[in-house]
Image (tube, rainbow, N blue to C red; front, top):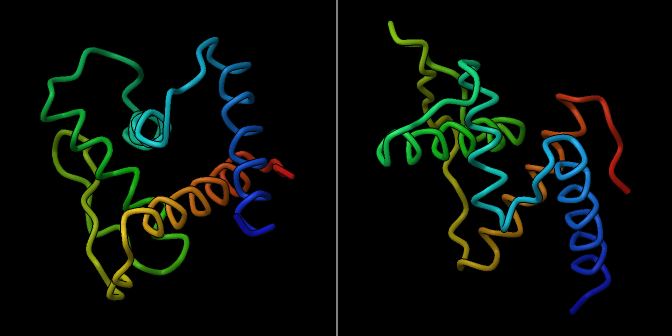
Length: 120
């Protein structure tokens, strides 16, 4: 493992602990963090979501965090308040580990920008 990867995992661990301090529960993995971001971005509070809505929330989160790198932009918000995104720059072709790394980096940037915190 490279130093960059170790630094990323260290910052990721700090983020998970910070979320645990904030909500009282530590997310299990990247998917758990993406779900929380999706709920945050939807802005309708924590409620019961269907399985399909949970998938949509994760899609919202992925689009939001990747928008920080210029891959997506908000297209519109529908009548139910759900944001819809459009792809504006082709995503790189990564294997699953590289995809996860990109998402973690962008999630960290999301928390730093949206909540004005620094995760070192």
